[in-house]
Length: 326
Image 1 (tube, one colour):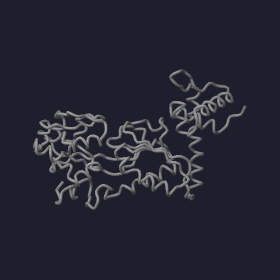
Image 2 (cartoon, rainbow, N blue to C red):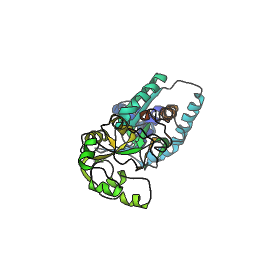
Image 3 (spheres, helix red, strand yellow):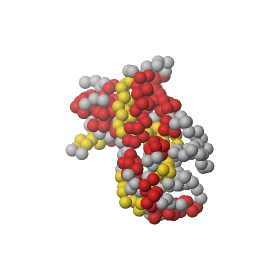
């Protein structure tokens, strides 16, 4: 029995993804096909490549050695094939994307739709999820991340800086007043984000007093794992909330939320496109990231006609009629 190149590729996918299930998702095929290809390769090479158990599969020492040897060879073949097709306009295959729920559902759909129309032969699969996944193991080609990037195995390209605003409803202001400083935040009821520690989420730009105040405990009566839910609770008058500008823009314009601390500048989030580290980025990933960069050029979609320089400096604060100095 002779080994087949597709069996080698499948073997590599199982090693990289960490499981048969993840490899099947990555290759857009069934688990039975993945298992059959791996078994065929083992039979052709007369070796055991994976230790199998009820908890999954684990590469043997032989498999680890084989992977180290074939990976650069397969990478070279891929680069040669990509180089030969550089002049072609058509993108094919499947592009798997994962993006944050609120940003994705509110603003990413039209961006992806435009890209899909430009490349009709490309299949696109999108998951909206706030949890952080290992992109390679989960079979994603790229993801969009908000905030600090801690995974050193990923490559990243910055898309934009997203300003943040401390908001509350007019009703809350009438009943409880507004904080005049960061230290007074501890005296107000806040709506907190469950996926990030409070001290990491409520961060501000400024001097030592501001830096020290970020560790002050807020009275987080309500904690939610979804930014849109937090926004809606703030609109209902339940407390102060720190929102990304893309979610705060509309309610600030229609008056259901107000800027509770207009002279304070929360630290903006960096929004990035991330993808597994590789010497050669595929055409579909490279083209889609270029498309994202163009789609989120200033002014950002939710800023309307506001003049934007940086994150908030020099632009008209949303919901107000006068410019506010940064």
